[in-house]
Image (cartoon, rainbow over all chains, first blue to last red; front, side, top):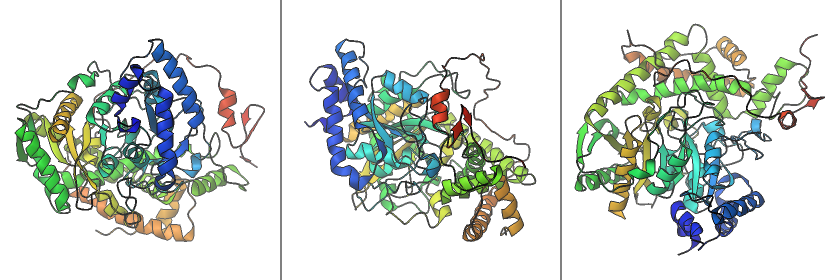
Length: 478
Length: 97
C-alpha cells in the first residue's frame, strides 16, 4: 500500500508504530503536489520547508511518547480564511493578498496540539462567498475527479486537496454549505458541526451567526477524529458552547438499529438531477437494510431558506467586511489624497464582484427604512425554519437527503446567474440557519463518474448520531 | 412586485458600503440588487406576526470574561502588516484640512 492510500488515522498509526516517518508522509504529499497541483490549483500557499521542520519536531515528540493521538504526524491543509501565525492568510482576496497573521485560529492551534503537520493554505471563493471556488482572486481550483468541472465551494481547495491526495485531511468552513457541497462534488467526507462546537476565533468572519469550522476527510473515522481534535469551549469566542460530549470517535459503531430517519419529500422535487435522487434514495435503502426506520415526511418552508439566508449572510458580511479599509493590514489603493476616498478606492479595487454584490445587498437590507422589512423579516423566518426542524426532530433522529441538486457543474457555467447559483445551496443552507450539525458523504456517481453526496442532518449536539449512521452506511457499501 | 433600484439608492448604498462603483458596475449592481430583492420578497408570503426575530439559535446571552492580558507585545509584527507605518504608528492619508 502506498503512503497516500492511507486514511489520516491509518497513517498516524503507522507513524506511531515506526513504519512510516512523519517526514516521509510530508514528502509523499509534496511528491503528489508536484505532479497534480499545477493543474488543480488547490492551494494559495504551500510551505514545504516549514512542514518538514514541523514534521521533524512532531516525530521527536512521537518518539519520546509525548504525542500519541490519532492525528499525530498527519499532513493537513487549512482553508485560507483560518489565521495561521506567520503564514500568509488571504481569504483568496486581493484585499488580504499580503496579510500575515500574528496568531493562529483556535481550531488550528488544537489541530497542531494533536500533532498535525500543516502543509499549506487552500484556495476558496473570495471571503467564502461562492459555491464553486471560481470567485478566488488567485484563480480557479479544478475538480480532481474531472478537471473540466468545479470542485464546489467555498472550501473547494480543501475538498480537492483531500480528493487528490495533496493532503490527508483538511479544515474548511461552512456558512451555507461550504464544507458539505465541495465534499459532495469531490467525493470526500465533510462535516459542519453544531454552531458553537468549534471556536471561530481566528476564522475571518463572513456570516458570524452561521459560520462553523469543520473537517474534510477521506472517510468517516477521520472526520470524527478531526472533529474531536478541534472541538472546544473557547473563552475567546463568546458563541462557543461548553460541551462535555466531544469524544466523537466513540460513536464509530455500525449500529443504526431502530434509528428513525426522516426523508423530506420537499428535498426530492423539481430541479433535482435524477441520478442524484436515485443514489440518495439507494443510500436510504442501505440504512433501512441495516435496521433504521426510514420514512418520508414534509419538512416545510424549504423554499424560504435561500432568500432568508442571503439576507442574513449579506447583512452580516457587510458589517464584518467593514474592517478591510487599507489601514492596519492588507491592500491599500495608491493615489488617494484623503482618508475617505482611500477607503472607497481600496475596497473597490480590493474586493471582487461577488463580494461587492453581497456587501451592497447587506448594506441595503440593514439601512434605515429597510431594516424591518428585510433583515428583521429574515430573522423571523429563520425562527420559523428552526421550529420546522424542531418538529422534525421530535419524530426523527436524523434527516436524510441530497447535499446539492446536481453533481459538480462545469467550470464557467455558474457565475453568470447569481440566483441560480444560490439555489444550488437549497439543501445545505437551512442547516446553518438552524445551527444544526450535518455530514456529507459519498454515495455513488453519475454516469460521467462525478461523485454524488449524501447529506445526513442531526438535531443540535447530535453529531454522534450522524457519525454512527454515516459510519454504518460507509461500512455497508465498502 | 418587481423592485427598481434608482441611481440615488445605489449612490446611498455605496456610501454605506464604502464602495466606489464604476459606471458599468453601478448598472450591474442596480440590476443585481433588484433581482435579489424580488427574490427575497418571497419571504412576504409568510405570516410572521408575533414571531420573535432570531439572531442566534441558542439562548446564550451576556457572555463575560475577565479583561486580562494573556498575550505579549506583538506590535512590531502587527505593524509589519500595515500598508504604511512610522515610529510605531499607522500612517493614514490626510484626515482633515
